[in-house]
Amino acid sequence: MFCLKDEDERAWEELPPLPKIGFGLAGSDPGMVYVYTGMYMGPLDLEVEVLGDRPVTVDDGWEDIEEVSFETFSDTVTVLTDSETPIASFPPTVLSAGVGTYRVRVHSFGRDLMWDLVAEVPVEQYKIQIWPARLTGPVVVQHRSVHAVMGR
Image (cartoon, rainbow, N blue to C red; front, side, top):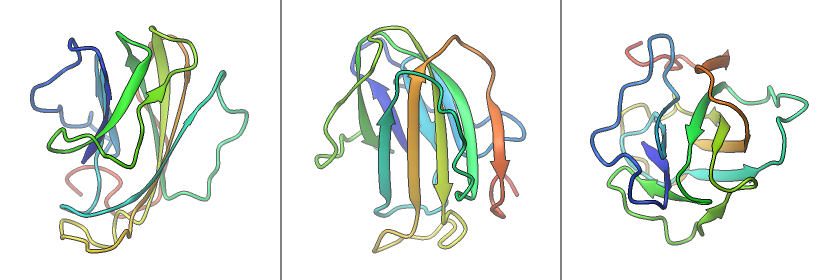
């Protein structure tokens, strides 16, 4: 697992929630977005894209895509490991509309390749798109991997 954490100290700092029933890729709390990886531990490829509006199209070349809402207390988020350690090579990300509410679309590829194992090289790929939007419930855009839903 890795997460996007609002830099404000009010962001959630306890155990992350499990994804809602029918979901397995992303979850959120105020100030936090959790991304559940397939591997137990290891490096991964990640791209974060901050947008001004909802993307016009969905890139369906990914295996799994889910969307969650995200409420921020500051205008900056940081990518953290599951131990809440900032990833040094990934600078803080400034959000396009400052403090407020956002929609986060999480894309994944390769989560089945090393399920619950330790990877030595990147085998999983992720793309996160963030844009200003009102708070709404989570949405499954597509699930194609074997482990798309937690517990399967």
